[in-house]
Length: 328
Image (cartoon, rainbow, N blue to C red; front, side, top):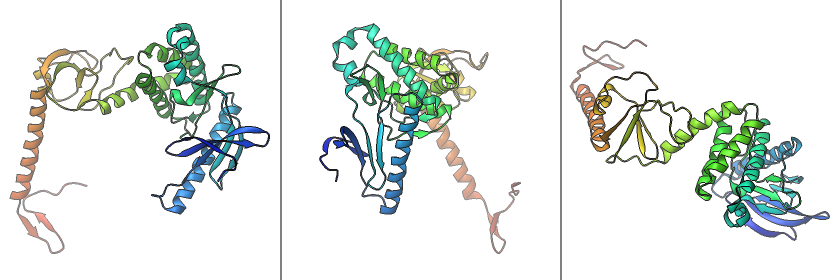
């Protein structure tokens, strides 16, 4: 139990307290144990995550990113003591503060600060893991952008991980702050200008966006819509889409890369190139039924072949009669 501590917030992983530390007020982040985990495993995981968060905090601050100053790490009690930052959460600024809601110049300034901060974080190969507007603050004293809550952070140099970090922030903007697409574009511009390896990250971001849309779209057949074959330029800030799966869904269109018979359904049996944009109206229901029927027929045929095969006993094993052995 932390002495003279006041609980201000509790999340899925930790409790946040304010408590006196030497001569100042500190934020105390206490990770609690999970009853569903084995006690030994739980202790190891919790200690590792406390250490990882403390390392990432220290590394970011050392490289020039404004983060809460680290005071003390108590691994035995899974607790971190850090600076109590006086300021305003970015989410509150964009939701309740009329100055930022109506002022485009203020929004651009804030977007630039966010982009520069993310560039510095990714430049030292730190992945925040939970980039949302709730984990970004503006200091009351100098209006500096502070990145907080490194509870899910880790170290990685992969462009894929950094792209996922940006995608999480993009989804947070779109879900919490409607009509903020221009602001996020400004964030990416500042990120691009201040991070030398940003080109690889932003190209990966386009792929991550495609995967995210595919996972979140409705997979039901039975709607009428436009069909675009192979890679196309979408009006969704995607420069180039590489479609490798048999189906890919976007907001109001369906991308299909499949056998020639599906192209004939569109009335387009021949493609001029892999990146040729082909649009046509078709009945998604009929295409879905055709595809499912083909799969059923293949399964039935395979089952029938297996049932009709005669087996000969070889002592330790049985093998089909008249079936050649496959080369291994």
